[in-house]
Length: 356
Image (cartoon, rainbow, N blue to C red; front, side, top):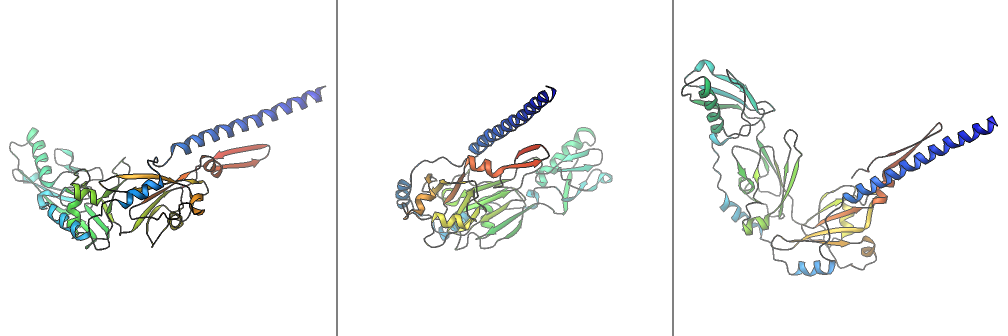
């Protein structure tokens, strides 16, 4: 009887372990399905037939010569020394006319501060030279000097640069002297080259605690309509990239998301192949295509790669500025990430979301 009881107890413990493992797997499956469903691309707003007809009636984009003429006409920045925006790493000389003993040389810290006699630390990053002078004068006037006159001389410039890349007449790295916008910097780079596309990417590294940003600006909409919100302010350290005309952006469940040149009569499948093909967890029946039309409008159509392969939409071709987003399969995402580890009398279960 004792042996039988022992067997029953052992059997119960085994069952408990199995049930616990099943519950754990079920919980992970439910969580991963929720995660995969949450990370979706754009919602469809039209179908392929309407998208194709929209494209046929779309306005012709501005040519490069017209764009450059408007960019040049909009250039208003006249950088001067007083407009230079201080940033971390800059070495400055601070001089006080009324108290030369307090003159000091200091480097702006990564936090944007400098150490000054009597004042300890003063935050000046992000201020133009003239604004920083006024700020320091105010602090000395509050407690130490009656009517101070401060001058700041930049001995070494460190971080305030803007990188211009891609289809520009003069790509390169330019000093960031003052607060200027996107149109100003396009003018400084002497405008677009003959092969330039109509979308500009502004890549912005995040400051402390901030997430890096990537902004996509449509040049036709910005220049034609004069949309001030698209003519974004440029910060020191930004990278401005102008891709060549005839490019498609592929994102989502592909192996190498990014921008790719459009070959003649390029299909959706060929664009995805250029991006390294589908990930194992891709949903081939749920592919979104975002197309620029006119007046800043974009429409989203849902595609199925299976239908494309069967030739049901074989007349559909990629156009300049199209964006392809391949959705992820919720179940495929889970089984791609689930992993099992067998040990002595143990079943381990874990989940790692697949890399995208």
